[in-house]
Structures are given as structure tokens and as C-alpha cells.
Length: 555
Image (cartoon, rainbow, N blue to C red; front, top):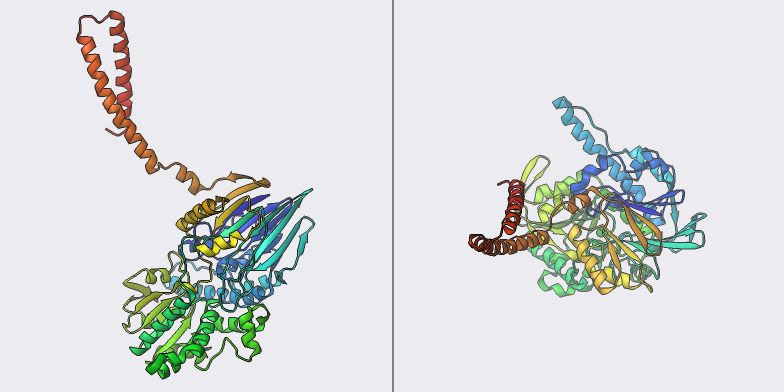
């Protein structure tokens, strides 16, 4: 069995891993690259899409599913296995992704025509997205699926977003069975609406995310209090709260928490009660509106608390001052109203969608607040704003950042360091190897150290396009090393430099001491012809070596 890592190895986007077993090829996810790695979407794939037999999709987020239409466009005719909710969310998300790309290309081509430059094509179209959905085969959680005589899989609830899955895979080779587990994105415990991540009892090999492998989230109660205080402070100064949010998962979670908090705490706000109670909350994302409907249709996989609310007739995704905008006109109108309000809009990393218009109209206002509630990948607009950019460019216009900027991490859909470690502790027998993916470099390295120190599991951090051969339980060999790792091997570490400097200093002292002894011996009348000849030959050789050293050092 070979595993090739082709995405989410340099960062957190573009998840895609290829498993080759006997005569079958399986892909684990096929997501879009975003932010600094976006250009990778336009490179030739590192495999022939027509050769792929199966795709196991962990969840619907575009960084895990977004290249499936491209895969089909380039010849894939296999089967895409995923949960029912993931399929329903992909129905809207892949079409939305295609629409965004078509709109961006249309804008680029208008500029190209004026400049007399060649026109470009979108990565894929809405027609491509629709066609790709024909290859999906929804399955149930905990259902044992025999996709081949030698390959069996099972999808388990990952608690990350509606329908997200931890995927178990059993590969049979004669009398030996190797089990590989793909974590997908692991959610947090006690996350609103969703169940906790499933505990897996056994695996030989685990491919695992480490988005927050070196960070600990804010306490949930403190997180909610922080958000409410930001809203209250902004509303009291007459401003607008802008929340860039992922349309699927994060938006519904914020709606749920606002609903719950309003119901439980409105009486605690004293003189501000009526003010906060009447502040309108707008969900301005057609995708989020559609996704919320998918959530309502899949209440069967909600957690117990959310199901209990539904039984009591309390819809956790609906409250009096919550409004869903549909049309472009409704969206534009929000920025021409001076009333204090909350706008939840996508995309969560501010790379596309209506959120960019709301940022354009509010970033420069001192009384507005921008509240980030999700991960911001390196190179995205969201990351630049969150990290303190003084001005940003939106729609060709330079916008000054005068608004208050907040980052409320507790809303993350990804488990933090402790959550990831606790999930690993659920294995009754420790896996042979842990492949760590889906994280920035330092997060992965720090998490690997924690895992090895606390759990004694050997970790591997793959580089882009590296291939690992699994010959049996515990037998792993890297059979294709990445260019990045080869380049790293060719660079001297600070430790190497320090070691050589110490050796040079030691030699300098030794050389000075020895030369003094030799000078004293040569100047004495007792030196023999034999010693004189030996010393002379050594000095000639040394002179030659010193000249070579001088040339190497450029002196």
C-alpha cells in the first residue's frame, strides 16, 4: 500500500491524499487550495483523475470538496462516498463555488479584453458541478460498506460540521488486514447542534489534522460572554458588528448561540435589555440560507440538546430579530442603513462573497466592529485584517482599517491541542504511526512533539507529494521524497554552523601552540635531517590545504 500526500501539507487547504492498494486507487478528499496556495488549483493534478476508483469525502467544506467538479471534468468516473448531510451540503456548496469562479473569470476577462490580453476559463462551471454530483453515493454513519473485495470502510461522526466524518478503512492482503483511519477535521466537544467526535478504538495508521495543534481554545462560556460584550459595546456607540463566517457550520452555530443567550440572559442586561433585544441580526449569505435549510432537514444527526429543543417546539435556528437576506438589493440596503445591527456573512476568510462588500463599507468606520470567529489561512484577506493591517484593497479601492478588530477563537470548528490529544487517547492500542497533516508548519511540529512525549506514538509530517509505502503493521518507508525536504536537507542548521565554529577555534589554538613548538625545534641545533625533511613535507601539504580553504571561503 502506498499513501501519497497531495494537499493540506503546506497549510490547511487543498486536502487530498491518494491511497494505492493492489489495483485500486482511493482519494481521501479533493479540496480547493485557498490563500497563498491558490495557484496550485491551476496546476496539473499529480495523478490521472480517470484512474481513481473511489473518493472518500470527509465533509462538505470547500477546502476538502472543492476540486471534485474539476476531478470529474478531467475524467473521474468512480464513486464518491460521503454522509447524507455532506451530500446535501455539497449540492449547494459546489454550485456556489462554481458560480464564484464564473463571476471572477467574467470580471478578469472584461479587464483582459480592454487590455488585449488572452481570455481565461474558470476552474470549473456550474454545469461541471452539477455533473459531479451524479457520482456521489450517500451513506449512513456506522454503516459498514464493502466497496471492494479487499477494501471496507465506515463513516463516523467527526463533530466538525453537519455530516462531517472520521473514516475507518480496512485493507485485506491475504490473511493480513491493515487498518487506516482518516480523521478529516475533528470537531470540539460539546459543540452546539453537533455530536462529539466519535472515538475510534483501534488503527494501525492514522492520518490526522493538526489545525490547532499548538493552541488551546477559549472557554465556551467566556467565548459567548466575549461575543455579547462586543455586540453590546458596538451597538451602544451606534455601530455595526460584522462577523465573517463560514456559511456552513459556523453561521448556524452563531445563530444557535445567539438564540440561546438571548433567551437565557436578556433579563441580565439591565438598562440595555430593550436595546439589545431589538438589535436585528442579518444572515447575508445565500449559501448560508440554503445551508440552514439543510440543517433543518437533517435534525436526526443533531446532538441531544438540539433535538430536545425541537421536541419542545423551539427551533434553535430561529428567533424574532433574525433575518435572512436573499436578494442583492436586500444585501446592498444593509450598508445604507445607519441602525446598529449584526451582519453575519461569508466567506469566513473574506476571500469571496458578500462579506467583502460589508468590509468595504464598514472597515473605515471607527464605530464598527469586525469579529473573526474562525480560522484564517495564511495569505487570506481575513488573516491580514486580523493580524493588524492598517489598510487593505477591496474592489480596486484602498480601504483604511479604523474599525475595532476582534478574534474570538472559541467558535472554531476544529479541536484544539487538548481536544486532539484526548481523541488520540481514545485508542485502546496506540497506532503504529501518525501522519500529521492540515496545519501550519509550527502547529504540526509542536503537536508531533506532544504526541510523541505524552502518548509515545511515532509521528510523520509529510511534505507535498511525498509517498509512503506501508509494507505491513509498523513497516513504513518514504519512497518518494519531496523537493522541499531535499532542499531542507541541503541547508545547514544553526547547530551544524556552531559545531564547525567550535572546531575552527579549537584548531586555531592548537595550530598556534604547535607552530611555536616547531619553530623552537627547527631553530635548535639538534634537529636532524630526517625531522627537517618530514616537517618540510608536512608544511608544504598544509600550505596547499590552507590555500584550498582560502579559495572555498572566498578570501
